[in-house]
Image (cartoon, rainbow, N blue to C red; front, side, top):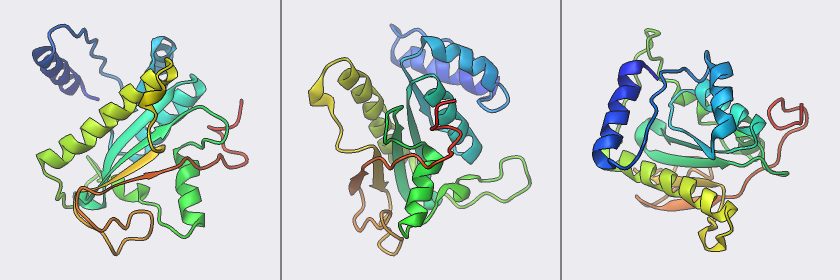
Length: 206
C-alpha cells in the first residue's frame, strides 16, 4: 500500500477510535514480503483486502508460514458478490490456491483471475456495481470473522463461525455456477474449508 494510502487510513482509524494505536507501514506485500514476514512474528492475525490475485496469495502464504490465520475479503463479479475467506494453518485446511482448485474440480469456477483489474497496466477497469454500503457489509463481516477467530482461539466457543468461506450476495447471481449462485440479495452462504493439494508449496511443511 502506498504511503499516502496507509497514512490516510491511520488518520481515519485515529479519528474513529482515538484509543487505538496504529503504525502505518508503506510496504508492498509482494515486493516487501521479507520485511512483512518479520512483522508477522508479533501478530495475532493477518487481514488482506487487496483486490489483486498475487497479493492475496502472498498474504495467505506468509500467514501460513508464520502459523497465523489470514482473513481475505474482496468483491467478485464486478461487485455482485462479497467474499470472506478464512485461511487457518490447520490440517485439512487448504490455502487460497488449493481452495480455488477444489472449486474447479468440483465443477465450479475460479473467480480469482477477474479480481485483477489491471491497475497501472493499461487494461481498462472492469465495471463496479458495488456501492458504499455493499463494501461496508463485506468489511464488517470480515472484521467479525477476524475478531471471532481470535476469540475462539482464546477459548470462547460461542464465537465459532458457520464455516471458513462466506459468500454475500450484493446483487443476486442465480445463473452463476455453485457455490456462487446466490438467489437473493444480502443472502449469505458459508462453506467449509477444502483440503490442501499434494505438493502445494504453501500448505506443505517446508
